[in-house]
Image 1 (spheres, one colour):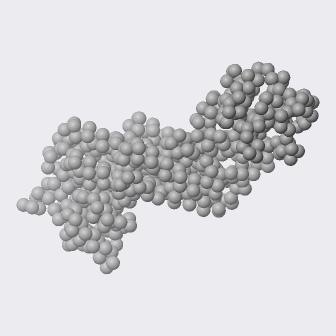
Image 2: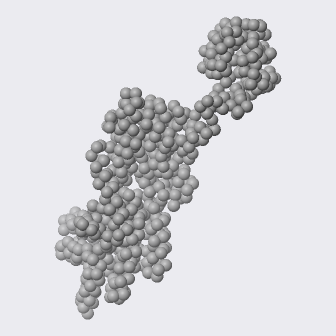
Image 3: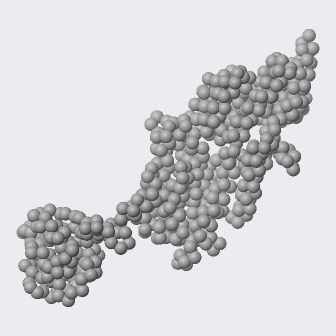
Length: 589
C-alpha cells in the first residue's frame, strides 16, 4: 500500500480505512472526484503492474494509458450515482489463462451521503470456453456433477501424488429398467423421476453438496467434501470426502442410499415403483488411478445386479475374477445367439382327468459347442443381468410359435391348446421389444390365443403400474397370462385380485408337500382362490401318483412334472402329445 501523496487528493482516507482497504481480498482502489488515487491495495497494484513508490494523488492514466479511457467512463457514471461494470480491455478483457478481467465502479459517499469519489473493484471471471467446459461437467437435468467433474474428483483422491493417499469411498448406483419408465409414462415423467432420485441422493450424503460450474475447480481437487454425480442416463455416483468411512459404515451408507433411491416416486397421479443396485468400494494402495477405482466399483455393481434387484455389494479382489468369468460367458452367449446354439425343450402340461396334453411349456437350453447342454441356472442370470434376455426372449417366442405351427401341420390343430413361454422381469419392465415381437407374430397369421405368457409372481408385483399396462396390452392381443411359481411371493392374492390372469401355476414346493395335512390345506386354499377369480390352475412338479391322485380328487384341472415327462426336444414332443391324445380318446370311448 502506497500512501505518499503528490499532489494531495481531495479527500484523504483515515488510517483505519487505509488498513481496511489493504486487507480486502479483492483488488480494490479508491479514487477522488478527479480520478486520482486515494488508496489501492497490493492486489490492485499487482493486477496493473504498478510499482510506483508514490501512488496517492496520481492519475490512473499515468500507469495504464490503454485502460484509462474505460476507467474514466466508469468513473464518470459512478459519480452520477450509478454502479457499473465492464470488461477492462479492448480485447474483451481476456488475459493469460483464459480469464476475463472485469472492473466495476460504484459511488464512494461521505457520512451525509454526498459522493466524494469512486470505489473500483477488479475481478476475474471464467472465459467463455471455460464456462462451456464447466457446463458440460455439470448435468443439465439434475444439476449434479457430470462424469468429467466426478472423474476429476476421483483422480484427485487416488492419484499417487494426492497427499497421503487416504482411502476414498466411492459408490455407483444404477436404476433398473429405467427405459421401461420412459416407455410407459413418457420422457418428461422419466426426467422428473431422475431429478427426484438426484435430490434424494444429495440428501443422503453428509454435505449435500453438488458441483455447480463456479465450484468446479474446488470440487475437482478438494477431498474434504462429498460429491454426487450423474454419470449416465440412469447411473449415479457418490464419493465421500475424507476421512473415508470404514467398510462397515460404507455398507450402511450404501443401503441407506439404496433405500432412498427405490422408494416410490409420485409424478402427477402416477406412483412409480423403482428398483436399483449399488456397488461400492473403499480404495486401497492398488487403486493408483481413477480408472482403477471405477473399474472395481463397476465390478461390485455388476455383482450386485447378478444377485437381483435392490442389492448392494462391496468390491473385493475375488470379485474381479468372478466378473471376468461372467463377462467371458456373456461373450459366449452373444455368440450363441448369433450362431443358433440355443434350443427349446418342451414339457407337457396334462389334463389330469383325461390324460390329454393340453399345453407345452417352452424351456430354453444352451447347446454349447464343446460342453453340450448347459443347465439354465448357469446362464439365465447372466442373460437377465446383461439385458441379452431381451433379444433371446424374442427368439424364444418366435421359435415356440414356429414349433407350434409344425405340430399343428403334422398332427392337426386338435393336438393341444397352447404353448407357453416364460417372460422375464427384464422383458416385462421394458416392454416395447416384447410387444413389437408379439404384434409381428400376430401379423404373420398365428392365432395368439394359442400362446400363453408365463411371468413369475415376484416380477408381476415388482412394478404394479407397469404390470397393469403391459398385461392390458397383452390381453388386447388375445394372449393368455399365467402367474408362475404362484404362492412363493408375499402378494399372491393381490396378484389375482389386481390383474385379470387366466391361470396360476402352483409352485412345485407346495405340490411336494401335498401329502401332508398342512401342505394339502395350502394347495386347497390356492385352488379355492383361483376359482373365485376365474383362473385355471396347473400344479407344477408332480412327481408321484399320490400327488396326482390328491390333486385330481380335489379338482385341480392340470398338472406338470416328471411323473408325466421330462422336458424333451420338439420332434419327440409331437409324438408324445399325439399318443396321449389317442389314449384320452380311447378312454372316453
